[in-house]
Image (cartoon, rainbow, N blue to C red; front, top):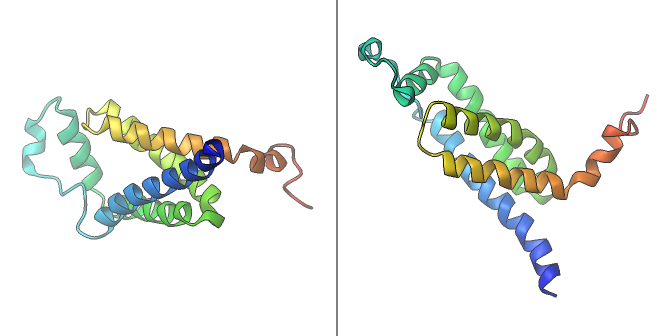
Length: 142
């Protein structure tokens, strides 16, 4: 009984947690901008990874909107049970990139980005049987 409850509630909890986090970050990028605008002081900030990275990402509003849309679309898809696998597939490369940037530039939310990425990996692992036809070549009809 407990095993069945966990088998059903764990993926649902992961999906909703991932969706909530990506929705928040995506909407932040799309509305008022998460990264900010570059300043004249940037040239004097040698070696401060967070400031340099955030200013660099904030330099292009188009890039910020692109990433924000990806996060929002992934969040919506992952929250809906019928499209959750597609959402996780879209979510994973974005989350992996965010995690890499957080570690490489010492952004400070490495723990959260690692948890989000690992939760996505778990969801993809639980749905691994859905990928067998694609890998075996039976998913594409001529």
